[in-house]
Image 1 (cartoon, rainbow, N blue to C red):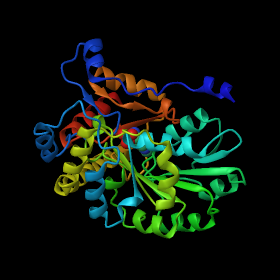
Image 2 (tube, rainbow, N blue to C red):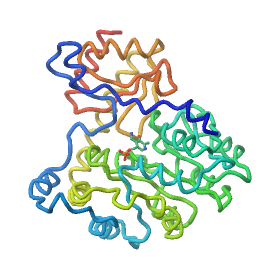
Image 3 (cartoon, rainbow, N blue to C red):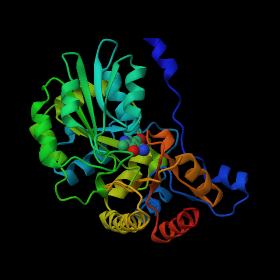
Length: 357
Ligand code: PMP
């Protein structure tokens, strides 16, 4: 099974601002490639980090005790229903490490967030990918792919890169049909951006279905991608199974403090969500005007079909100072995924796209 490893390529991040500046001799670059928050993080986080004086020589709290208490209180759940990761990326790895191995299989949508597949291959498990239908998870197809060797099912809602989501009723009816010995991971990295009224409530879902874990992150709306903090919400029996696969000091001290401060500023979160919604509307309007197919998004990004080689659009935008994500790397060779920036960034990008088309 190690042969499978040779089919993997290391994660290819978007180009960095500095490298594009140098390459094209541009002064201003706008990066809209990695679904980061264009407004950074809350001032409360910056204040907390500035005043953080604990010794760098000490290991962080491996249990993330303070952050755990704060988050558990905020969510209104017992603190043993949480697990913290070095980003939700690490939680994906922990789940894979704990539950996948040669002989087991795992079911996921395609295209979706690539780290589910990547980690499953690393563990030697068989990957069963079920094509999206109209950009959405084919839940029946995913159920059909399940057999007695299936250990984990991955659901990404809102899905990266399409931005589509699974309405609560559909999700619950799916969960009712999944055998209880299979772990269902619901990756909600973009949860705080969601405005759909029929989006599921992970707290009641993980209560009702003890075989479900919801993953969230401080990297997106909270604007802390560089500090690497993510968390999972699940029944304590699931957390217990996963904990041994976690690195003992996975979430660093700065990240824990920053995340705690970030939670205390829900106004910032609400503001970002609202601006994001307006930015998405600007993109929708643009797509309608130009007859470009797109998916309605519940995330902070939009996948637009330019009906041409996506790399062409990517390259042209790069030369104009905008780093976007070519769909060629995401399973959509004619689409480009763009992070919703600030209103002025979106307006400037749309102007360039207009000129390009
Ligand atoms: N899940 C999804 C769907 C994502 O898009 C991302 C980030 N691109 C992650 C997980 C990982 O985020 P992080 O490790 O920063 O929490």
